[in-house]
Length: 351
Ligand code: PMP
Image 1 (tube, rainbow, N blue to C red):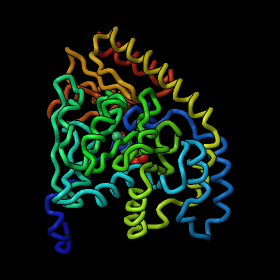
Image 2 (image 1 turned 180 degrees about the vertical axis):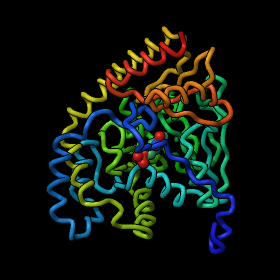
Image 3 (image 1 turned 60 degrees about the vertical axis):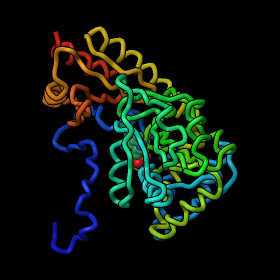
Image 4 (image 1 turned 90 degrees about the vertical axis):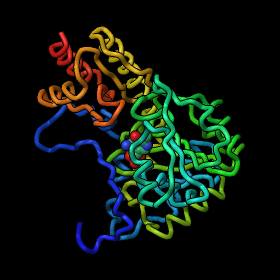
């Protein structure tokens, strides 16, 4: 740290992203990316937009917002586009949390939440999951805090029902409830329709997973118009050109190709079932996942050992050196071929 770094960040421990190693070609199952390329329409639009990079991007993302409103059945003003859902989440912490509206989220969830809270110097509560890694809905009823829930949760993959989320939203009318749906397209149910009914619900989604655009950095938030207005106040106070023109254009292309997205999600769901079946045969315990990853442990092998041995063999999975999680690894569901390589290697390791 330099002598100039503000002391307000003394306690800040930055988020540690999953490894993106460049030393060799891995079977990469560690950061929940899609194994499929982006839609052809996204690629074509991005290439065309590159011709006009001398101009600033459209801060209102007009074309993308229009297309998204059509796809999700929204009115303009009910959606904000951001530089990945990480940015939407960051803006939500900045906009809706303070000493009077502390943040609350599960103790096991997306590791960025506590970092965003620290960064904004917001008090926060981490609510323990049940022993089986499910969320106890009662813990969130009427708690009068700004709630952040990933649904499906990460790294567990376990999803709550829309009915349970509605109970949480309804019981906290004076606080925003943020539902982070990064993985919703792989088998869980979206809360987007509830946005028309509740003015305190913010649904956050991303193009990074189901739409194969993690490298383009595009996410969005859907909520009542007043909430979106607040998020835009933060956005226009930091970086109005937060999304580059190629990404905006690619986003329009991806949303014009929902068939492709749906087909890919279906393949991932099938590959997840294949992976769960094969891992079960090898003796793994696997949490019931509705996401494009599974969280698995083996009764005879240490979680970190599995991670290290797989890495040696050119397969990357995500291991968390955190209490309660060390026995597990989070394994992204990739192509059938990738999953077969994983299974073949695990077979050699555990047999
Ligand atoms: N929420 C959750 C639960 C995630 O796991 C991730 C991916 N790391 C994100 C949000 C952020 O995704 P992105 O910024 O790529 O949209």
